[in-house]
Length: 235
Image (cartoon, rainbow, N blue to C red; front, side):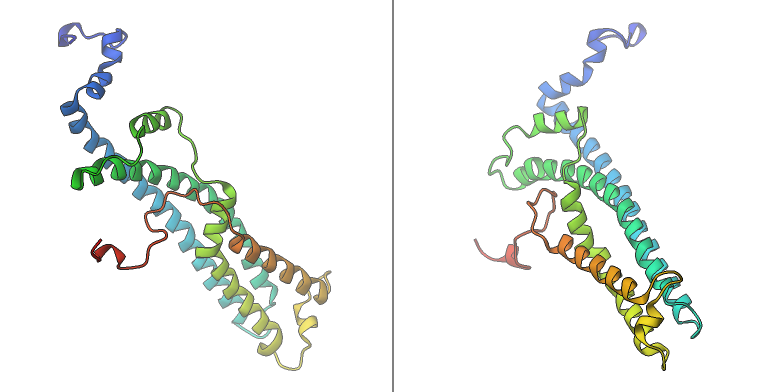
């Protein structure tokens, strides 16, 4: 060990001080909980940012509904602007979700191979989990593809929100104002109503296909493929 009075951070022994913890079981197990708590804290922060995007999207829907149904003279295309804004939120959400999933993957790797094995010594799930974790810390990578992230976020959050605005828009152009033809009400200045309806229908169909189209699962989720309550049953 390098003494305190002669400590030189540029010396190899000082630079490689953490390697000693990797070779010493007691030092490693004392270091790991601190790292785990840090990853969990970072994961919670990223999840909070993800939830904040959803909160803003919901607030946007409330504002668009209030504007569109505030009076009979309010134009229905406010709801279409709301749909467009939701898609912009989705673009921001994708990056945040992929970053959150990358941190969650590291947390789950530790839980599966350390804490689960400590509670039930059945062996580590991943043979080279320490090497995998070390490589990911040196060169962090996103674990879930943009395609899967898009499908998951659409299915869980944004497609239902877009559906709310779509139903409100259909109600607005058909029932809310009596005596008007739906295609006339749906028209936007410079764009015929039939074109607007066609664009909305095609956009919604594309979103549904993106949400439901099967993709290989890469996201590191805790809950997948098990019925609720099965874990309590006798094996």
